[in-house]
Amino acid sequence: MLGKLFKHEWQDSWLIMTILNGSVLLLSIIGSRSVQRYFEILDDMDMGGFIYSIYILLYVFGVIALTLAATFYFYVRFYKNMYTDQGYLMHTLPVNHNELIISKLLVALIWRVISFLVIFVGVFKVSFEIDDILEIIDNIDLVVSDVVLMIILLLGSALYSILVGYVSISIGQFSSKNKVLASIGAYFGIKVVARILRSFLTFINLFTFKEMIEKFNDFDDPSTRASFMLILIVIIYIACALYYFITQWIMKNRLNLE
Amino acid sequence: MSVLVECRNLSKVYPGGKTAVSDLNLTIESGRIIGLLGPNGSGKTTIIKMMNGLLRPTSGQVLINGNEPGPESKKDISYLPERTYLEAQKTVADIINMFSDFYADFRPERARQMLAALNIDDKARLKTLSKGTKEKVQLILVMSRDARLYVLDEPIAGVDPATRDYIIRTIINNYNKEASVLICTHLISDIEEILDDVIFLKDGHIVLQSTAAAIREEHGETVDKYFREVFAC
Image 1 (spheres, rainbow over the protein chains, first blue to last red):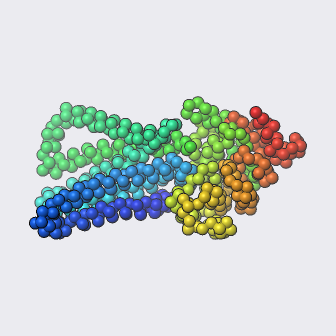
Image 2: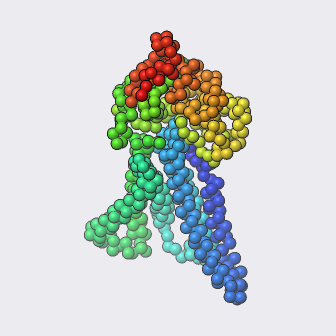
Image 3: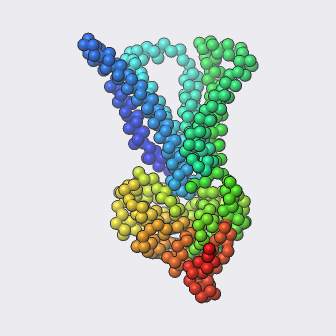
């Protein structure tokens, strides 16, 4: 049934997400280096610099808007499907709670990756020409483990940003008066707690892993980079697992649709 | 006849302390149309939600065809909530596809026949339909399944008399005769003629469980009138 849930979730979200990503892609094509040359010609007439500044501003806003809109869209979908009237259908399908959450999580994650690639490609296209990009890649002294760990870390960050919304929305369901407001409150509450924990961990690390921290400054060493990323990966995935299980527990044990 | 639903010492206390259902024992057999009747706040919807796995009991147990509420029990129940649960952006055809995907007992051709009979365009988006039409679409979807148990929560509340007649006809004509239909309502007179059994609920307790015929025979009045006597304020 997971496949069927995934299929319907994908069908319901692909159009809006394609429009969002397509808009940013279009902005990056318009602003690519080759197009910038025309601005440089215009620059002779004292107009290019001004127009290009406006373009860059638009592009930055576009990227921020895409990220926020995509995140917000999947949060709202989760809330509506699971905890409003639509929940009467979703929770009476012959599927379990894990399948419901995982199908949504997977679709949101795939779109996160697509959005990341769109922004990544866009930033390069806006900032560099193909030759510059090849030169940059050539100059980076990355080993395979760096790339693998970086991908795992980025996926973990994407999962984290989705699950922090799901768990906040689920915690918000405990409120009998305003579930949306309670969800927003839970979201910022979790952010504050996470920040405090991060500061606490850094504080502990300073004393217990002093040598390691000093070693971390030596980022030329691949093993140092790997250790640093591994620690981040463990922390992020533990937080993801925690948020997932809280969401699943609330859905299973405390579901109370109006 | 086999036992379809069994509630054993079922209780639900909401956060805040309100007891909605208290130590309820109930058995529903197959092949019956049962009216779950009671005034507002008597616990009807809470019981139905617990049967459907939308609420967890505080204590006790509910079994559907021997299974606790979960993916297996949901294959057996076709549930019509009192809310409009369909996504407004979707077309009627989208929803039919969705039901076909998830419910092995869903009969899309039956659904399309009923939609055609009511002149409902399956390409129409839900948001363009009136409240009454949406309710008809939901009922068509629910009754197009060959389920073991149909649970209908207030299926005739808030609709015009013509729609009410259509809904009642749909229930009678489409339910699988081996199955049972549990109708939860406080509009008794409209459905009284189709009921085999009656359950009266008050403050989360069963105050009467009997056949509709027995009530008429023993009390010499309709179920509706007897209900008004029992629940007189």
